[in-house]
Image 1 (tube, rainbow, N blue to C red):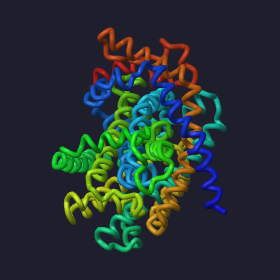
Image 2 (image 1 turned 90 degrees about the vertical axis):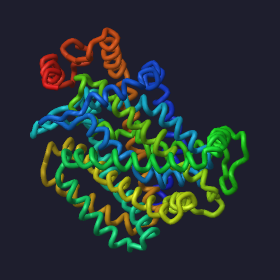
Image 3 (image 1 turned 135 degrees about the vertical axis):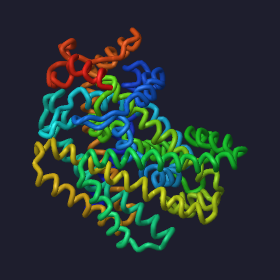
Image 4 (image 1 turned 60 degrees about the vertical axis):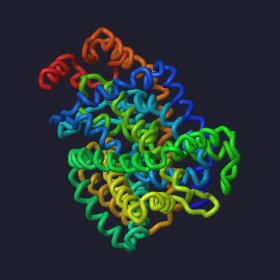
Length: 482
């Protein structure tokens, strides 16, 4: 019965609502904001390179990016890409690219809104996200509560199981480590991090994420260099299969529609643009420049790194290996390990196992930080609530190591779909606010000024916004300090 309900939700959400809604909202913000992710792509790096500080109120923008990347770069980049190739063929990768490129505008919008409507909790720490901007911007606390509950279920519960499942599978395949042993170790390691709260998670991500991402991309670039002559043909295959210029790969049924469906589904699962997850940590950053739009640029870059860089690396590793064959039924971590072994020998199996260990483990702790943010919104910092959430999240980490891939992936798809629908509706309704924020930032940029946001100068944005956070005095103080 449970499987039937989950399958029904996935059919409705992914085959109809999100398939069109996700792309439509991404295109909508791309057009409304004047192709901001392309025209101002360089600003993403400018803001990130400038923003390295934190203070008593929040984490640094760099830490916020690393934490969001810790969540984005996980099983979706290794197991999810392999699954997309198996079910949708090479063309699915093209649609993952499309989702990411238009999703950069969506990520910009939701993170800018999270910054605008953020608040300070009882400890003086910045908090925010979709639940906060739904309540303050749309004046819909009921809607906000539904979103927060959905986020806790998806990121605090289900996704922890998805990540631990992939780790257990990889550890068993590479090192014959029993799933129970992997589960126990993961629970202990994750507990040490998540019981430290957001700052400990951010510091952990700041160190681990750049190292793991660089190592993975470096290996992929080495494989591409070794197979340089075959790269153009593989890239053409991705585009050709996306539009039906070539016959479907053996074992892949559905042709263009299969590529589209699986590319969109796995693309959203991987980069999370529009899902309403990353804004939770984006809101906790101390912005530099002191403007809500600055963190929109930072998180847009996160989508680019996740899909265009890391997911593409995995896809090319598999497609260049010569072992890709959907008819065998091999998919997920096993396919990626098999492909890497074809390139690097036994080292490839061990490398992917270690990569998924770090990718998925960082996702577990980052996903928990999102759920913690939602719990703080619901309970206003009620400490027993956070403890219960932490224990439940760790329990699901252990549970996930003992389940099948299909079970946890299907549950994750359903939970993520519900959450994404709620957030996409919210940011679409708040689009006029995003436009005003963006125009103010770009105007100051064109005037040669460092953008500074003072909500008292924007009465049309003032309702629901904490004027003590977004004041000229606070921005000038921050500029002098840093």
